[in-house]
Image (tube, rainbow, N blue to C red; front, side, top):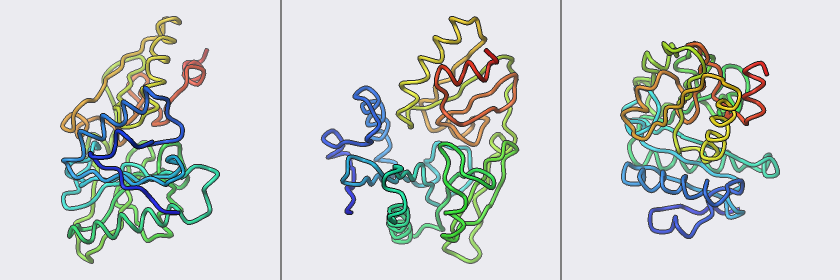
Length: 246
């Protein structure tokens, strides 16, 4: 399978992801458009976006990490029907080639501690490809890196990401438009919370500077309850009610 390089010039004509509705796709495309001049790169499969990779210079990544000189992978995703055919390895290889051509120190990405977790990279796959854990957040999310230089300074979480917490009661949600599914589910969960009188505050992150000081290692979706980090997994209205004990 060949892959399509999505750029500012062709993004309006391209299908980004097979799972997106029109509104979700527009939100995601707008977010991408604003990142291309910051060095963002996006490749997708020809089969209607069933697998893709999205990466950016770590200085411009919407995550609270210290990783100047590195490339940060926002997302490496392969749909279930295409798993096991080498697509993750192919896309990662393209990212490695590009990062080396740019003279970068290496590549970094977020994963779960010890196992695959929703919306995070598979740590077993990353370890197989030579990545190592360079920092660990209290909430069990790891920063993993593939260094190109033997003595390169390794990426680390900022303190706000290493020890995620907020000083508010009830549910507090930080989110961005980087993941198209937030466009669909956040308003529905917000409405569900209102209907059930559940304290629920949303904080929509709309710029890199705010994202880089968010009190969680993941900024696409970070849900807290009574100050404690709960999950980076995007919640449906039913899943949210279950978290709330209803």
